[in-house]
Picture 1 (spheres, rainbow, N blue to C red):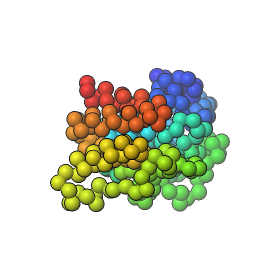
Picture 2 (cartoon, rainbow, N blue to C red; picture 1 turned 135 degrees about the horizontal axis):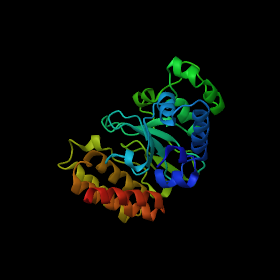
Picture 3 (cartoon, rainbow, N blue to C red; picture 1 turned 90 degrees about the horizontal axis):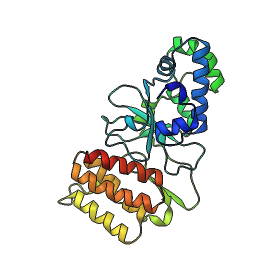
Picture 4 (cartoon, one colour; picture 1 turned 60 degrees about the horizontal axis):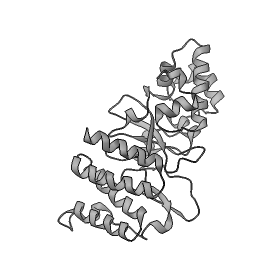
Amino acid sequence: MNLYDLHNAEKSADYFGIHLPADFLRFLDQAIAFANQNGLPLAVLLEELLGLVRLEGYAARYQQTPPEFFPFGSNGSDGEHFGYIIHLDTALDYPAAYLGPMDFEGASFLGEHTLEMLQTLLTREPAYLEKYQGLITELGLTTTPGKPDYRQYQLQHKRPVPPPKDHWKWQETSDGVGIFAPSPLFQSSHVQLPAVKNLVTSPIDYFFELATENLKSNHWGSALYYFKEIYWENWMDAQVALTVLTNMQRIYEYLDREHLHRITGQMIHDLQH
């Protein structure tokens, strides 16, 4: 895919695997215009301005990347990638996050929406700030010192939480993206894996039991929580991963999350081939 085509909504949806926010496409349009006007390769602009070495979708994923995490780019360092957290694919914009697969910390906050994500990723290098001042101003970003970068958010364990919705609940998970679903689909509380590691013979089997019990009682959100916790701790075990992903796909189908059902199917396919 030609980078210069990615500001087109349909071509970008094909490339990234989902319709990204209009503000992201608008940013690409403005970046392309600035690059052309100043005789710069777009790839150079993206790396110097935001630290993005590649714009990529599914190819940026690692096996432990959660289904809800839709990558838009990476920085070329230890698999670190950036993306939108999309629980429901009907919003105008989405929270953005960073995931370092070698960190085992889960997804951490980049911004509540595209503009804040761009502000978080914006270079701190004075020479680049001067070089791209015109584009920075056009984007509505600020060069005020002291703005947090994504590594500071990671150290704070700040998570990308979706906007609240009446009678819905966001349940935090170890992969960082959480679960967002109607409140009746959750139990009032959930067991955390570290709390039971020394109390039961097999924490994995125990969490499988809890997940199964919640499926039987139609607490689909809580069941998804336990499956996600199993996956985050055991994604390197192919058989466990396949079993968990198959159950997660079933839950996404029940929740009418076609985009997550599809991505989980791709993850299953990748494990089997």
